[in-house]
Image 1 (cartoon, rainbow, N blue to C red):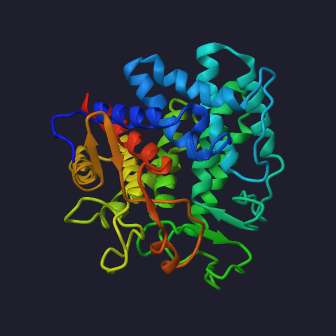
Image 2 (spheres, one colour; image 1 turned 135 degrees about the vertical axis):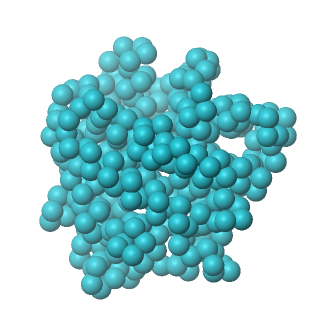
Image 3 (tube, rainbow, N blue to C red; image 1 turned 180 degrees about the horizontal axis):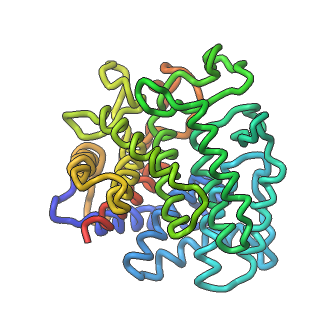
Length: 363
């Protein structure tokens, strides 16, 4: 449990310092791999660097990327999945700070991955080759912010239109009209064991995937600020999405469940990474004026719930519990049967982002 007098920025720094003292940049798990797992954490760390100006956070992030990237911009990455693209969001701030061309060379290679990713009949990206004809909510966060950043550097506006298409297809095929929430995955062929035979959707609202979707929307709006590409649809979606989330906030803890809409089931459990991503989404929406200040009580309650139930601080060491490990699409029993871990980078990254979004609206 933390002391309530510590600011969310101070807590974010403790989370960063804990991981930095546990792992060298090269050791960030999975070690020596270009992977979104590390990047989610480092994305949060870069927000801390921006807020504090402390070079140790920038240098740690740079060291992770430089360990995998040579001076000519060569690196190994999985070329059949959207997850590989997400790490590319680190390249642009590194380039802006250093002007080292290798970062843009690497960005071009990731952009070219988009030319080879398989697509549904309507142009939706498969999440991975091994998940044929499947769109996952996760994919919007994994690819779309990078695509917008790439356009901002290389003037390729067709990427923005592709982003709009990906999100539009998710709303078309994956949004549940009853709850207002999006299902985790959609199988165009309706062949997966989890796929509804009529809709092709997976049957559950898995918390972290719903969180990736909301996080992508608020980040895309920030990246596209001042531009006119039709992104106002994201604003309208968030105005529906956020109240839908609030409907399922646990009244006692202020947190959200692994399966968002089934908190009444005994085997369902409160999950910290999705709760963090929901805080981030709502806080960013407050700052952008998409939802009003009454939602501040929602995120404050959720943050207090994290501190009370999921966070332990011993000096400068912070432990975050209740983090679902990496997860595929599936049915209810699969999701609630997934193991949890402490300080998994999925959760630490999401938690740091939540802290920083709260910091931004408390200034």
